[in-house]
Length: 77
View 1 (spheres, rainbow, N blue to C red):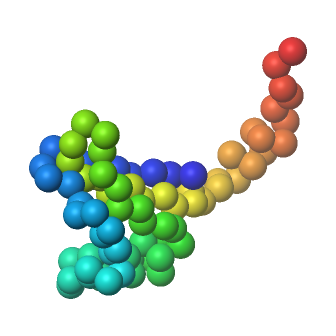
View 2 (view 1 turned 180 degrees about the horizontal axis):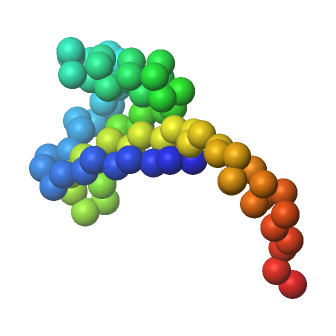
């Protein structure tokens, strides 16, 4: 799973923030691209130390070498 975080140290998202309801062109572009092109999810969160964080998660394509390595890897004992 891949993850991209973009965070700042500003005011953060307002209480009750809903990205779909508050969407402007930029948020619509992010949400659409993440869902359609990356088959992922976008999370809009406030950081405990202040500021906002947009976290995007998406599946990574499995390469042929990844598949063969995972099939031959034994758990450590």
